[in-house]
Length: 336
Ligand code: AMP
Ligand code: AMP
Image (cartoon, rainbow, N blue to C red):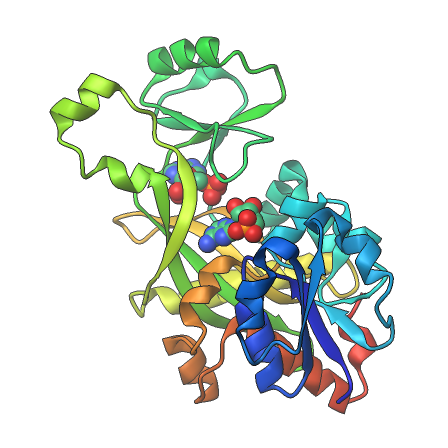
């Protein structure tokens, strides 16, 4: 096929390049000298670039063949290169850059999701009106560090005073009591459909460790929960939730064509939800690229098996879409 699929060597790189190789592409991992040896051991990676630092990625990609290299973005792009990185690469890039700008802006993301009709936690514009447990999220917070929860207005006032956050740098959101579930979708422009390919939950430090401590100890050390991701657990959803999620996913894609015309959202995306005991689904956040929770399904998920009858990871699904686009002479339609 003559095309190389490339990505940064972290996050979901192994899955993306394994999937690309399985679909017949050449593969390139853009690595640092420190981690290159690790990536060299995998036979499905044809080439490992060894940079001094990930910050050199954009300069390095300038040296690659623009016509023949396709870059697949994932979480490390923003983490290592900044939110502008998507716009700067000169390589063919799988995904809609306009939708990523909307995703990166909390306000615009909220407006978009609201238009789809999906249920979301209430946002309080002022601390005065708090009548239920809330979670305070500061804008710059990465992976939930810097979030805090408050059971009521009194606790919120004390914690806000202590945190010394400046105005307009945080939001106060209703705290939903339920269980988190991350739903992994793929929106195909080629097959014109939205596929549910998996679901997971995160294993977060320290919040998932707190429950292992006796209450007396918890009281003694008065710890706040933090949410650093360490890994992910696969979930199979109660089946009656699936048609609901299918509809939510389809609405998100439909409305995205209005907020980022003409293509809207396509490729992998993930909806972070909390599901209550009444099976009410609340959307918390959307990620418009491959999420690392898909790594739980490198050999396929129950849902990809049902749709495709073969072990198909999200990484391989991306490569399949690109392959089908090449065969139909529509590659330009799915690259930016
Ligand atoms: P890393 O390359 O592991 O440092 O991750 C790059 C970015 O992706 C960071 O912002 C991480 O927080 C995020 N990330 C990595 N792995 C996961 C995961 N399993 N779930 C959610 N986010 C992740
Ligand atoms: P996030 O950074 O949005 O992935 O959130 C970090 C953690 O906070 C996750 O474990 C979420 O499940 C939890 N979380 C975020 N917002 C809410 C909310 N409104 N209600 C309950 N839990 C939340």
